[in-house]
Image (cartoon, rainbow, N blue to C red):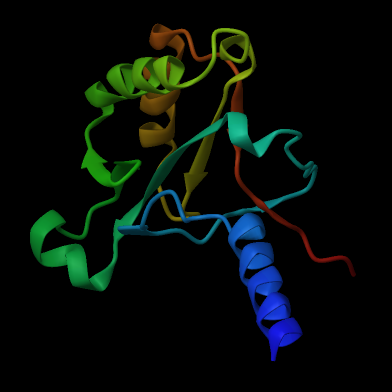
Length: 140
């Protein structure tokens, strides 16, 4: 029995160490568009996510059916992106700040005008490294 409790605690500590917590809950539906030139991000810990899509069914009564922007766990407007970028920079180490990447995870049905507005706000906030989330195209 003594060695069995040691094994159980080792497994418990193992799963506690390797498990990561989900950073935010999605309030918007995202089906990424297909991309032909996909690459993986190097350091996912230095990525800030902007989610864009139509609100999920359970949130449509509050937010409507038009595409919305989600920053962390909040539905936001385009004008809130500058403050979001600044808060994300302050949350990182001084040495990591130049390497922060902003990932735009947008639904394939979102209009390009909204994405252009987001890009313009990111440019004004000084977040010039942008990554677009896409799924790989199927090979024939």
